[in-house]
Image (tube, rainbow, N blue to C red; front, side, top):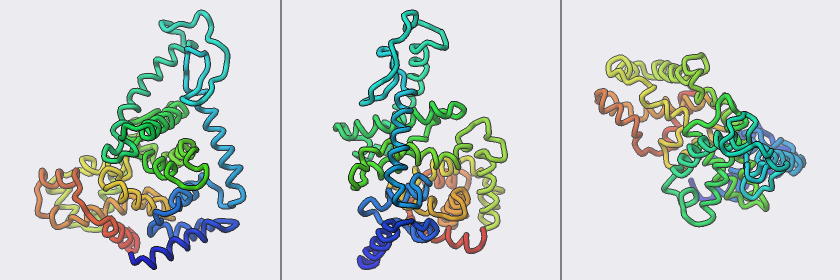
Length: 347
């Protein structure tokens, strides 16, 4: 993109976000083509597109203060520390009195704070393992210095609180990958005071994102009309409409079921198929698409298949499965352009 055009887009975003009321329809129309990675514009735009911030800019301070205070209270109430008799995460004061004298580490009582603590510890260990594996190539997530350690601690706490508030779903492996882009952009937002509240802000935006895609993580819904297999079937049907020859070769002849490669594409919103900056660019379009995030995601997945069409048509089962499980490097804008063509064709 030419420098002048890029600067013009930055000015337009600044203007759109600085008014008395943000026109969400207009924001979607410009954000779908990518949000400039400058001055925290993406952080603010994502918060608006995900419904965390209201359109009226004068309401932002009160809305943020209310949500952030509520998140802090969740941490106090949900993170159990039986030694001090109160909840509270790192850096937060607990509340409540001392644990009952009868309560002890070996207690099996459902009311025991120690029992709850050990039950939570197992889930926290899984979250800890996954967060440690988050983007190992990025110092922000994987470094050994104090800032990276703090970033991981805040991500772990955020995922843990989500799991506690959603006992029917809890934490599922891979959720860390969906939290990471949100947390990264909020934590690096240069706006005064924004970074200090990245954990709370990422938590609520993560909640909104999962509201649409959570059924893909629920194993009990796998075979339902809203589960992951139904979404994979929709992907297969869309490919058939877009390119029946490719569909017949891949699905009918090679027996390459979308579940073998697209399960990860869909559940993790393509965060593992593209470098971090490219995945973030995809998310700009995903969040801004007025037709719905799931439909947008399926068009992008179909575009990915069409992008390697010729190689797939020449391949057998083993070759094609390897190709799609380790998707080749590609210009993300090429994929997005193909996806937009599919939209124009009403596919």
